[in-house]
View 1 (cartoon, helix red, strand yellow):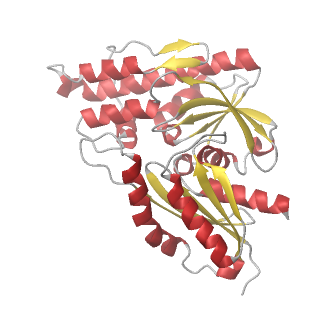
View 2 (cartoon, rainbow, N blue to C red):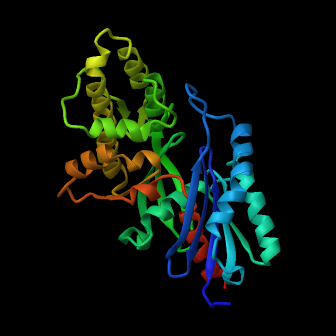
Length: 324
């Protein structure tokens, strides 16, 4: 038996099953994930289907993540049990990870700590950065189903999170996935579209700018516009240009609400989490715009910006240390 302390993290979000093991030195011992299957042409999953796939995925994933791990080194289990850290936040898919975590906890006789999926996203990106010690900052949670601007207050072991802005209707991720599916791409489509947008070339001028109202945006309009443009007779020759314009419009809207947020709150530190935050186009556009502005932007490792259990496990390290 070694004397190394380890934490097992489990996250079962709507589109990915994730298991991770981290050490108390914040090292990532293992990080395994698998996307849930979505049928060609469909734009999402029912919760019952997501829950079933998580139950199918977890045995093989945990076996892979725990290979070579001495169970006596595991001091706690950390799990995402709900979407957001507020009362009433609930999605059935998180029950798969929660059930397994409680079973692990009973078997190993170690505590099980519950966090939200959103907190795990934030921790995965800010760990080891100056944001880790900031008392407050603003975080954008931009994913397939979430488009929120959050005021984050750090209490040392978790986060007090309040929504101060974001989308009034659908999310950036939904816009991209719907666009990709309409183009015949597999779901989720964001990564492929980002690759297209990053290719050298011009962009069209067919889309109206995204409506920004102080700290809120409306995205259903550009979603409809983009898919109507796909019906054009010349779409084969302009499709890449159209994708590039879509990413330009998304980036421009983020610039505007970021500037509005600085005026509204006085906070100048912004962290970007969630799958859409891993977009190279969006990242480059915002970093270029705010260069030398005094506004601090944090984009984490693109891989850790996406759904993962690493952030959840790292929160377990904090919680265990604080309670013990």
